[in-house]
Image (cartoon, rainbow, N blue to C red; front, side, top):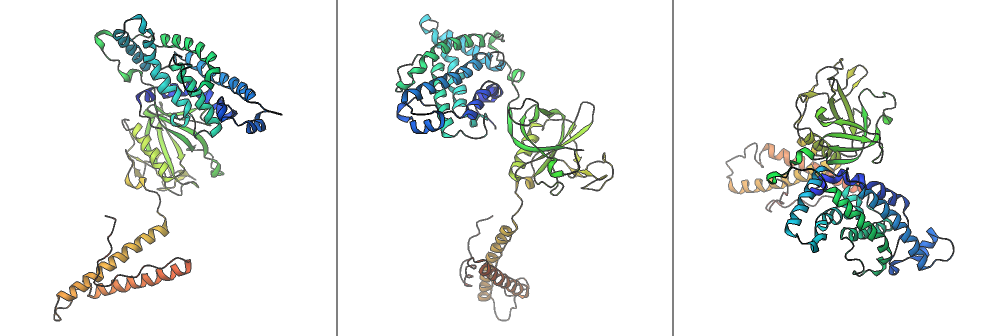
Length: 463
């Protein structure tokens, strides 16, 4: 995912580290949570969560306990994340608070210095991510209705905390009141968290801005599930040689692991990359394969093969990885679009594993890599349509030529009435007959009748 909001670009890895465990727990447990009496589904909840009769009070009590647990985990993770917060964010918040204090020096405006930061962190960062985890790459799919309702209630609670509890009891949702006893102590903890967050050294002399490049964390450029294998891997049972892994691409490395939550991860540093290329179709039993050739600190080249689900996904990853490695030095001018198997390269048949590449490399995505493989039937139908339009133009040209010529002037070979034009018309008639027969056999209507010689040819929408 490519994020656009500056706070997301800098803080996305931080956001994942803070919220992902709690969000994953909510998705996995799928508990029924509801505080609004007008939306409680007592019979449904009883079948799922309770035994015997169920009352509104019991649903509220159970929901309140669940929300307290989830919210407690989230608040604990947030207030304990001071050292995890990117330095660039902390310095920016410190400068923001200083400007606010200069503008509102009065003691009665003390809360404003907290609002200036909590408005960004809670109302535009933590609460939206809890409400819609997929948009922040915390989950692959949107929440089901039950989980979504839990996330909505938690996002409302985080908004109240971000507002420092000043609007508690003033809203149009009095059924949220049971949570107030939890929210107010959380506000006190959040204020202390914000004080600690801005307690950081920064270059303030002369209002010099802090250089983002010195503190910017590796923001995730693209991520998702792919399949991978390394060169020299198992030769037997090639269908099992590719393993499903979750990939993250940042400006620093291409990292992958068994799942997004898996802690053991492999990594290809971006500065090590020397070539990012497609692999010839048919090299593996799987289509849509790309390769990344990397050079380690000892100067050894290593190739990792990555299989995508579609041609479109293939060029998206090619473009992203090539963009990330575009400033690398010592890029390889050539590489092998095949694989070294049975003592030779499948692409050029050279017998040496270290033989120079037989195909040039690319620094960006070339035109051929942006297109899906052609559908033969669709391509044939498109070509037939163009030929019919050309035939109509040919007939019009022949009719106009016949009207403007004299009987003593024989048509040129390339004109519609000449020998070549006659042969083309005959070929087009044969195509019409064959296409009509195929359409009748397939149960589809035949081609529309050809326009009369004097009519205008149909407009060709393609350039």
